[in-house]
Length: 185
Image (cartoon, rainbow, N blue to C red; front, side):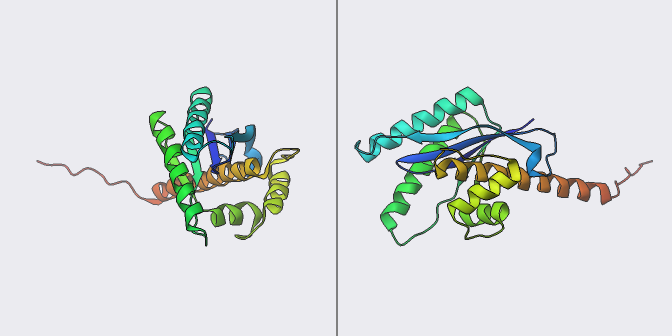
């Protein structure tokens, strides 16, 4: 079964979640189980470049330990603070490089797409996401930071969208009549 690693990048705290499909073609949220969820942290007192390096190493270790089939990283969004957006882009680059180094394919999802798929609203707040995950997966957030539940939402969104894409591909093939080879004399 597939193992999906979701990443909610942050330069101080990055959320991660590993989600495993229980079936070859998972169609509903309960077809997935949470393997692990948590955060990768770097000391905020460290220089920014050193924090990125440490977070890169932490993700490499996570990738080596669990060997996910795909890593889904939340896409950067443009905010009023250009400096924050640039730093987030640099961090995403470090994470994408870690995945490439570990030969783990990378997928990307926008925050609005994840929120709409999981909570039904593209502008849902972090608490609404946590409540939706509880309803969909039976996952209790407990003391986990919202970064971890956001990463879990990213994993689940990708898992459900991948299943629908697979179904769509199968239905297209099933309806297409195979071409018979032409005989030459």
